[in-house]
Image: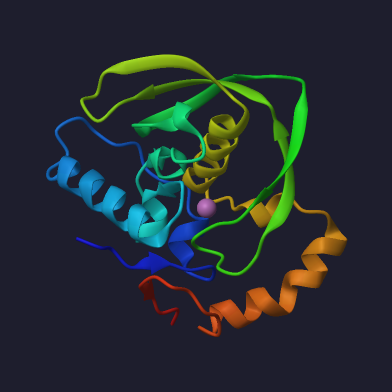
Length: 184
Ligand code: NI
């Protein structure tokens, strides 16, 4: 089932999400629906608050890039109650976008590598280093669980330049190729 995307202006995107408890009903179904929604909207990561759920859960699908990047074949990961426990001092800048902020793409500086502790869809614990592109996607999605968005990382000048576009978004004046939940 395709879930409607919550767009900038929706309060749930600014909330600190709740920990997910083992045995949460229909969790696997939700994860399945999130993967389906992400695939349809041609994104690489999706956090639960983006579909209106204040839960510490996000998914990453890099398999969609595997035609050009064979190393990402089958790269579908679920992160439940994730925690970034260590990050590299080295930072890299790379262009980001967000399904909840349609039409805006900006360079964001982030640590190049992160050590992440998380539970997978079976509540099995992992602690793993991620580098480069996967590290970037994970940091972007993890921010969503703390009510943060990539635009928060921009400098004051860039923020000022995007302001009118963001205000328009809160009034449902934007275009997206996927189903969105209207802002009130
Ligand atoms: Ni995002």
